[in-house]
Length: 288
Image (cartoon, rainbow, N blue to C red; front, side, top):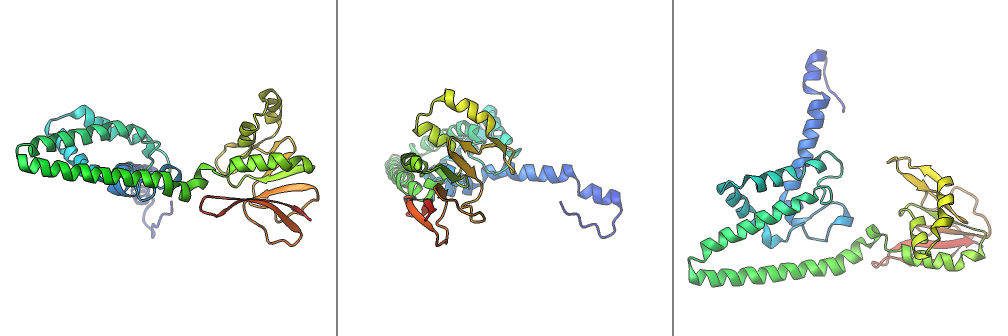
């Protein structure tokens, strides 16, 4: 945190610029971001893996029932439900990448209670007017069917095309193709820029755990950014951080797996794995 004191006394600077103030403001901002209508009803989680295109966490049609439900819960003094709702985002507010639909998963229960209460509250008001009741019920049902159908379309089609990379879509065909041709090379060098690849080779090839455990203990390398661990070797496969090892002299009889096609005249592309949106995801190549 940069402090602009302009010659103020130290105690004044520390009064207005300190860890308690900075962390407190940050936590409050992260906490209240979980009640942002944009997060709840319009755009959803900012991480592509946990969102549906043009959709919030809740259907848009539920917005009036949610806010009516909050009013009804307050009016009826249903404090346990309200307390549950306002405590649910606390774990997420202490972390990063907020608002988070994953870390604030406990909000699901009080949100459902609020919307259910709001629906009942409005229905009890509307049913006093028979003609209005039928019209309102018809409009709500049609709006809900349309909103839900729109969600299903976005979930099954749009999310698959736009965000398949976030779900590491290309690893199954990669494992199949590399396994099929790897015996023709002395080794395979593969990028980990898309994620951790060895897991998929273990899974899709039904690799014997008894054979893998001894290897896993000798090929661990700490992650530079998040202090996780990476496996940097598996059988004849070696893994590297770059998208493609441009800075090294490419070896003969080595299969390279990059996340893009390098502009190198002496390299031959063997195969390319595309995402559903036709973008390049993995490129298999070797030296001519």
